[in-house]
Each structure stands twice: as structure tokens, then as C-alpha cells.
Length: 159
Image (cartoon, rainbow, N blue to C red; front, top):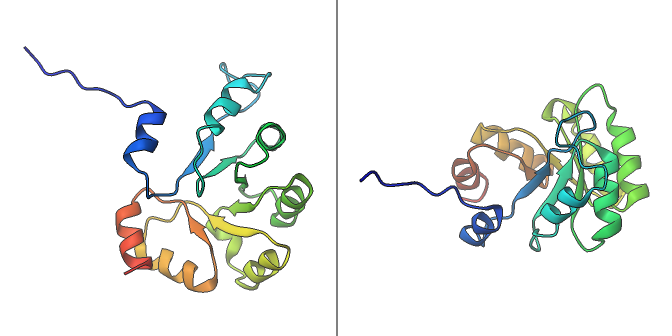
């Protein structure tokens, strides 16, 4: 008889990785067939976040609703060009989000990292799979990187 595989639930995944802080990215966009205008599903997913995890979303109204309903959950504004970094920083400050998470090309001016930190925010970036690039970004002051290869990135950044 063939062995069946088990796809873990999100809660099971979190339990398997107790020491690894995760970016819980909510995929929630108006126009998607499963968009939840009541924000119940994204809020339920965000409620599973542990201390150290960050809940992020490109759809800022979803993130604002999550922050309103779950004020203790660490949240972060995801953005990509052409959305300006200044606009994302303002959104984060106004809504009480803790992170700004631009695409890495938006951090080419390394002085921006210090400016964002000066506004009381943490800076993440996505998606960095080259461990040496992750190390460089860490050295510049980036607080977190989104990666598809956490083992290699952690080994480089925290040898």
C-alpha cells in the first residue's frame, strides 16, 4: 500500500519551527476569487503569529484591519516599485506597523535604512537568496530578509 503524505497545517508548521521567526505574508487582494471582504481569514491567519514573527501584506487595507483587530501582532508593510518607500514609511508610522519591507532594489541608497530606523521602524527586504547579499544587507542595517533559503542565509549572517 502506498504511503500517504501529510501536508502540514500552518499551525503545525509553526510548531515545527519554534526558533525561526517567520514572515507570515497574507496573500489577500481585492479581485481574487477568495478575497474576504470581512477580513476574517487573514485575521485568523495573523492570530497564529508568535512573538518574533511578522505579518506582512501588499494590500495595506488588509494589514490595517489586522493591526486594528490584533494590536499586539508585529506587522509590516510590503511594497514594490512603483510604490514609493516614503509612502510605505508614512503608512507604517500612521497605522502602527513596525516594519517596512521593500523589494531590495528600493534600498540601493543605503542611507535610507538609517532614515527609516530614525522613524522608529525596522527594515526588511525581499527576496534575498544569495547569502553574501544577505550578509551585506545585514551589515548595512537591514533587520530582516525574506529568503527562500533560510538555512544558507542564517549560516552566512550569523556564523
